[in-house]
Image (cartoon, rainbow, N blue to C red; front, side, top):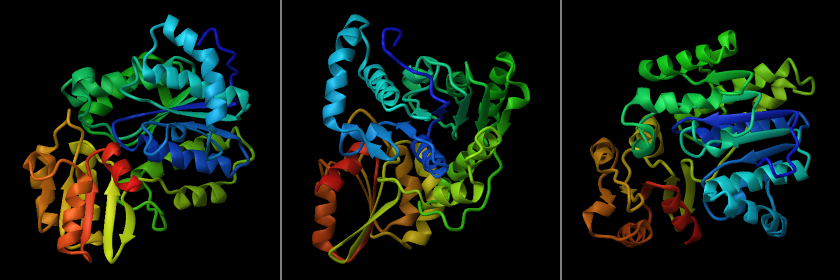
Length: 346
């Protein structure tokens, strides 16, 4: 990155946590755009196209612009033995610099301590709910994982966290003290969002965290209209987050939940969608397993189908069979971004 022509925007905001990062970042981007700010948003992974990762004022950057920039970046990336994600992060930052955005919002990939998004200083860090995921890289306890994610605060002027389990919060507070954030580390209040467009009780947490960020920034950004910003958060929608599709009489919900923490967050919202679902389909990546969540989902469906059953090799095949049996049913499909993407393409 030192060899790239990067400019410092008016605001740079980092987002880390286990689940809710993409939703929180997207909500915050919408709120700041409502203030007339030019916002660069970097998220991962993508669903249908790589360009989704790099957006300016909500629009994915075009292929030709990305390809032109890659001609400059790739020799540097190869020299540095940079990873896929590190190269993508450099690509996003160069696009934001080229477009002279006012705000950069950078979602961490894994953890924060060694994540590419923490390579540059930032003004504000946001920490979404922390749970168990990526244990092979981050540790096998909430405290260990929180200690890794706490590094999102390094080099920041302030940080705001969603409410966390005690073990995780203790690690965040200890890190905030170590980097002398003091009172500039805070925990957001959970507010009621009755008109939130994104389904799921867990989205109330993400909305509250993004709203806390907006209010903290409003004192220094005079163009922020709090009423307009709040409405922008409420209106925000994102593919693959309890996304409903109506198909030939069937109601199908898609969610990218890919770990126990995310599935547990979904459970309170399921009875309002279907009571019960005709089937819940759980298809995660082949290098993962969600066997431990199947008993949690069983009370909410007549049938739970997973890759481990051995009956189907993909969610597409399983859903197709379900629709053949009952074309007017209600179905929930979850397990990974790849699972959601495969169904959206079908």
